[in-house]
View 1: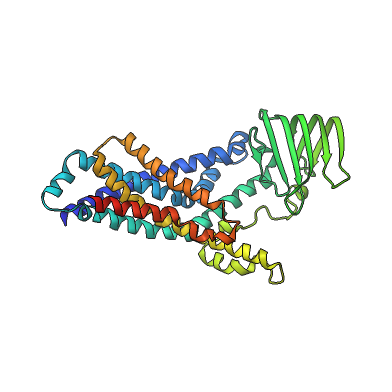
View 2: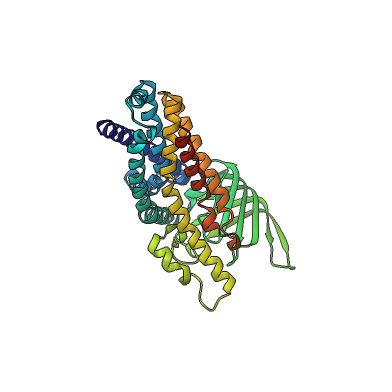
Length: 367
């Protein structure tokens, strides 16, 4: 019993440190991806930015849980195996499964905590983060024009510039989208200069050497210009009036269950209703599967650490990342089938967990 308690708390301490480290990495990645305009423009205080990232923290924890647990198990059990503690326990009569019982109990507790985070806390955190981000865009839209990235924060427009600086964009493309999301017009300019906003124009760009192409069915037209001043009001940038709409990814479990029938009117196409129900069911099962993955990943990590007997943090970290990346890669591939209800993607999303669980069982039985 004493060795199980020792393993339990040793793995727990290492896992908590690793989960916190990975969560901070996810936070930093999102900060560099979503907030460079605000950071460079200095329009938003550091305290507000930190509060916005703090709102995103529970969502980052949902993805950091499996990685942190796996690395915590690899680091702790690898150190114990390298020091001969695992071998000493086995020589004393303890089976590999009895030694791993502490890891199994801890992974079950981690699974329950990950379930609550993934199903309830994480969607709310993502919604709050995106809503705050869209509020920033609503107030300072010109600071979100980034070179080398597709800017999709505006509901009816997509912007892209291949290069430029803080005030100048080169090879600028602006697509205007219709209600169905299909492009209806494209504006392209070799150079665009950001102008200070006015009360009647939230976004102003001076475009040079470009053309405007209209995709209006058979009446396609192209208008070329040497210089054109583009001025967009807040109503044109945000036609819906609200800066952010709540989507399926931002709903908790109870909201998703209620949304299976409410998102599509009853009088609509039955195929569309079936597709909507499958999308919601897939989202629920995907969240459940990701939370459950903590258990088989931890058991496989225990066996690998006991076999390799390595205490090096870099090697253990590489193994943890490769193991979790393999799981995430398989889940992403299966998520491509979410729009094909006939193959039941809500069941297929559990295949990676099943494979990992069978692999973990086979490793322990082989021992």
